[in-house]
Amino acid sequence: MKELEGLNIPAHVAIIMDGNGRWAKAKGLPRNYGHMEGAKTVENILEEASNMGIKYLTVYAFSTENWNRPQDEVKALMKLLRTYMKNCIAKSNKNNVRCRVIGDKTRLDEDLQKAIAKLEDATKTNDGMNFTIAINYGGRDEIIRSVKRIASQVKEGTLDPSQITEKILNDNLDTWELPDPDLLVRTCNELRISNFLLWQLAYTEMYFTEVAWPDFSKEELIKAIEAYNHRDRRYGGLTEGK
Ligand code: IPE
Ligand code: IPE
Ligand code: MG
Image 1 (cartoon, helix red, strand yellow):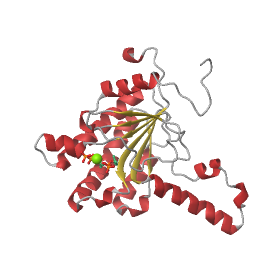
Image 2 (tube, rainbow, N blue to C red):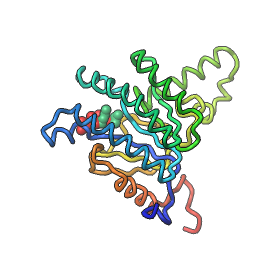
Image 3 (cartoon, rainbow, N blue to C red):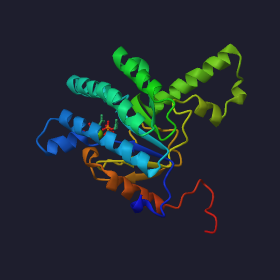
Image 4 (cartoon, rainbow, N blue to C red):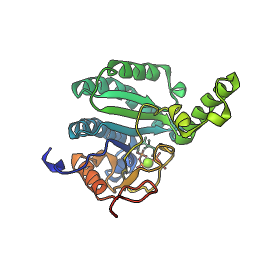
């Protein structure tokens, strides 16, 4: 892709897709219309990111805190997710994309759980981009679920507390198969993490834009990658030669 020539493409891009509601409100439309437009943006960015050679794309679709929204909005979001899981099969297979869902799936309606299993299964042999959708996901909840798994191993006597390492905690997270994100993008001018990938974002570069999610495009993603290329990534040490 010409616009990306000479740029270092981050291996893992995570996105907090925010601003669907405000985008719709600014147009005098219902919030749920914003969510519908936002779903179209996900499909577009999935394809663009895959074409750009991004290896992992992870998006925040529904947080553990989003249950606190009005019932009709939660219902509309769940309905949209159900449809999205179906559409995503064709889109992913066309682009050789493997899909995974992270978050506590047990609280989701059974038919949505089935749709998720179907999507994951239908795309599991694709070896292009890894696309991960966070649904009923909370970073704190994910860490607690990891700790519970580790605690049961301790209780069974298969693990000694002195053997618990960062790797063991990491290996018990929903994201155990994924590298940590290199770049986090949040749209619509909010400068917070909102309980997304708390453990995994320890050394991630952050990029915030005023653009609302339904308006996010390939061009905006390129801007984020350009900004990432101007960062001096450090991990507590010093950059070589600086
Ligand atoms: C992001 O848009 C989508 C979800 C969180 C499900 P919002 O619905 O948060 O939109 P704003 O932030 O209210 O504009
Ligand atoms: C974060 O957005 C969750 C998702 C994008 C799914 P929110 O809009 O829910 O976050 P807050 O409430 O503004 O922090
Ligand atoms: Mg929001």
